[in-house]
Structures are given as C-alpha cells and as structure tokens.
Length: 302
Image 1 (cartoon, rainbow, N blue to C red):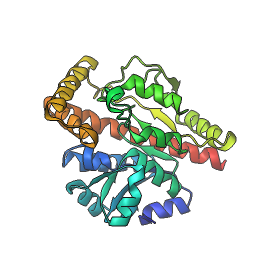
Image 2: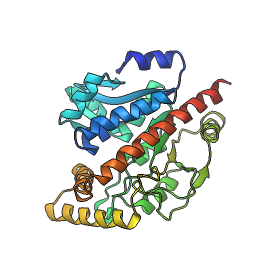
Image 3: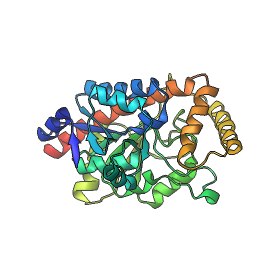
C-alpha cells in the first residue's frame, strides 16, 4: 500500500540512512510559500548530512513515501485533509489527499522500515485539557512505535508540563540534545528538566539498547532547542500565545482547527517572526535527525 519514491526505495534497499518527514507542517502548519520553502529546506538539510529524506503524505488515496518536487508543490498549494494515524485507512479507501501528522507519519515510516523522523514540534496536551480532553494522538502513537522523533519539543501553544508528564506516563524516553531543559519550541527555556545527551552517537546507542537489546516497542523523543540566533524571548512568546488563545475562544475555534488557527495568529501578531523561527528549527531538527540516522546505521551494522 506504500508508494515509494525511487530515491527512497533505492536508499532503503542499499541500507543507507533515511529520515522521514511529516507533511502537516506543509498543509496546515505554515502559509504558502513558507510551507513549501520549509519542506525543501528540511529535505536539503538531510541530504547535506549524507542521508535521504522520505517526506510522507497521501495523494488521492495513495500513501507516498517520498515526494517529487511537483507532488510536493501540489500538496503545498491544495486544501487537503489533516490525517492522523487512525484516519489513514479512510483516506486510502475514499481516495482523499492529506498531510500526515506526526502520529500518521510515525505509523507509515515504521511500516516502511524507517527508524528516524524529523518534525518542527509534536502535538501534545492542549491547554485546558481537563475540560476539553483535547490530547494529540502523537503521544500515544509515539509510545507504541519504535522510532526516534526529533523535534523542538511540543508546539508552544500547548500545555508543556502536562505533555511531558503524559510522555513519562506512556513510558516514552525524552532526551534533550545538548540541553538539560525541555525546549519550548520558539525558545530553549521552559523550566522543565530532561536528560541531556551530547552526541548523535550517544543517541544511536540508546536507540539500539532500547529496541535491539531490551526489545521495547516504545518511541524516543529527542528534543532539540531552536537555533540561538532565531529563538524568541519566552515572555514575548507567552504573551502572544495568550492573545491567540483568547482570540480562538472569542471566535469559537476548536478541535483540529485550533492549532492551525493559533499558529496563523502568532505569525501575523509577530510580524512573521514565529515563521522565521519555525523554519530555522525545522531545518536544525532535520539536520540532527540525519546525523542520528547515520550514527544508528553504523551502530546496527558494525
């Protein structure tokens, strides 16, 4: 059921390092053409580190593992579905197109034989979840899928402490790359502590110990802070988020439309600064994911 791009199929056959990329950052996370620019920047960052990008999404009911330039542009400019892990079968059955969330991409990447995935930020526990029960399926799917997920923590519009607590409850190992503080997406500062890891080789050894030696089926979250020259001040970000949440409440935006609404509000309210940071951290995550994918390949073939 998976349609592999020839470059990805060849890389997997030759046992080369491959990094999966999700597509909701393209379809629902950023405005055009910033979304297309980000997707291409991430793919190029992976190639520069000696790995092969495998952008995952669904076009007319076909699950794509790797996109051509034309297909990527088509997805970037078309209004499509936002697909979770549990809605992929529906999209295939009815011939729908959609961007795959982290949860859907995790599931597909594992089926394709890919063990590393890069994104901007994952979903998590929403603010006021005690009333709405709004918790992303990214967390549960990660806990059940043996893949390393590289991100700048969770999206800043979410409840970071509760998300980190739920990840612990779900037995998901959370590591900080060269930091002992869980990054807050647009900034490295959150006040939440995590285990610091210094090199891609260390990460690869942990991956091997988790999946090969201990036979665990749980994923691993590698939290990578945004580049220092592009991060935003914590208080500035929180002030913007509070305004965005208030605007969503006034307009009645809920459910799957909430996060895209909040991100769009932040982009406009910050004069594009949040998009700049988003692109920079996405590129940084892709680069790190490629380094880890290569190190893990050496770890498992040596």
